[in-house]
Length: 163
Ligand code: THU
Image: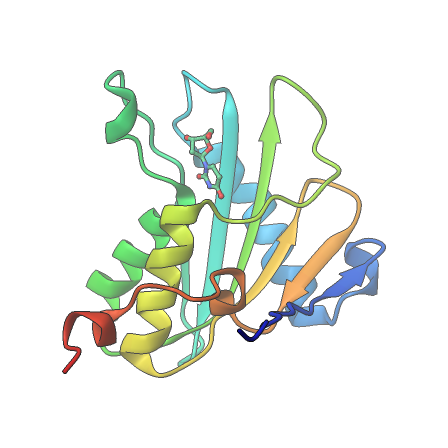
């Protein structure tokens, strides 16, 4: 028997003012985009904004539905848009923010499990890591150098083609 240990490292900033200019700009945009969310059921408004490797900017916000499971998270709306608008261009950095009618927005949120899986596939597809900048409307900011570090031991296309 052997034991394995998986470690995840990320940076923690006290607030947006500590970020590099480009990163601060992207997080501010994600904060703005929370206002485009359609979230009448959860009242939890998520905004995601990404810079692609060619410098283009793509946004996404959560889109809910009366049939709850039909709702989509901001991250997956963004990736679907990016894939349509710029089908051959990798995503370089994605900032994610939120605000809520039910509480404050001081603690970063991180993508849900399905979004982690989708982010991982996007990284694999373009062979390019997606940096994640996570922050609420105020307070601490986390930066992950690659989204896949949030989904260790992921199920990927390789698993479908095992010898
Ligand atoms: N949501 C996102 O859009 N992204 C996340 O990272 C977490 C959750 C949305 C889904 C749903 O519309 C609402 O937030 C509450 O779960």
